[in-house]
Length: 433
Image 1 (cartoon, rainbow, N blue to C red):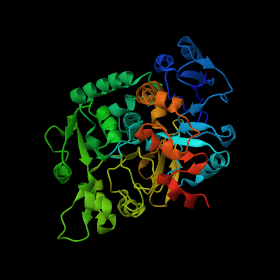
Image 2 (cartoon, rainbow, N blue to C red; image 1 turned 90 degrees about the horizontal axis):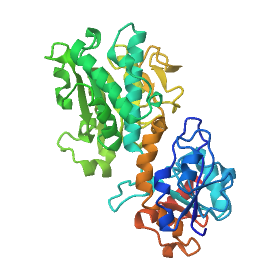
Image 3 (cartoon, rainbow, N blue to C red; image 1 turned 30 degrees about the vertical axis):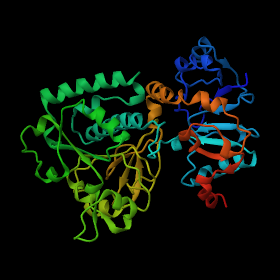
Image 4 (cartoon, rainbow, N blue to C red; image 1 turned 90 degrees about the vertical axis):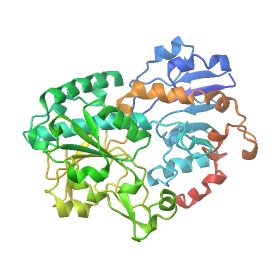
């Protein structure tokens, strides 16, 4: 079994039930000359018998596997000398908490392939859970909104929605949202919250997944410029949710009044722009954050703004699907887990309270949202990954990096080779000092 690959169990969180490769896709690998060994797990959404039925072996010990696949980070104790590992390493930004893991892999001369960096010629990611994060994140955000309104004594249709992990599939979630949609169309929304306006920061895969869920409800999409004109008196406002999608040109403006916004110029020279997203916040009931952010870009929501304007905001929930701590949403101070997804930021005291009750907006910041819909997430992810498996499994990892015969998108994702940072990732050495 020269081309034996392993599937490691997920143990970073008790909520992590995903698998990188599902049984149905294991079945076809034998014809490609690839054998599979699966580490047992008490929580994985697919059982060991499911893998055994399609010809995989089940073993606690994966040390004989040429390549080991997982989802989340591996503990440092798992790695063996010269091993090849494929997972989301969360290291390319120099994440301090994962530097000990990376150093251990270097000491052992390991090879690391990171799904996050499997990209095409235009630097677009090919293996990801973006849509699934958006789906689960939107549902969690609606659940938080309904729960917060309940605490304020406002009966509302959103309170009937359950957590994503309480449904068996995305299909079940959609069926439940259809019921809520009928309720809104027939009975309308509580007058106290009309108009309900949900804003989406970003328009990529995550945002599209989130919108896919919201669009099951009665939705009217409006451009950002029309927000000030939407009031409780707007025709049909009681029986619809107003959806607003914010793009880069809506979030920032040039420091020079004479300069017209250009997207590439913004990416190349973010220092020439200032944020203006907070101009829209007085009109939003819920904000769903789906953008990629680094500190070179302006924030969407600052603590200063919240302190100056609370409690005169209708904003009750921020669904921070991006979950960048102290990032585009400055009040996001920690990631949460599915078992306890929300906390409240209280601007008056610059403090936090767990749950939904408090004097400030609720922040939903689960950082493993796709794990809340583990079967659907695994099926999608595996469906993309399986096409790369034979090449990854059969590659000769003893040759120099220049001769490494991997598909170009996968080769771009090799962060460590023989324990050394590859050319594209030499910049990470500053994080390892």
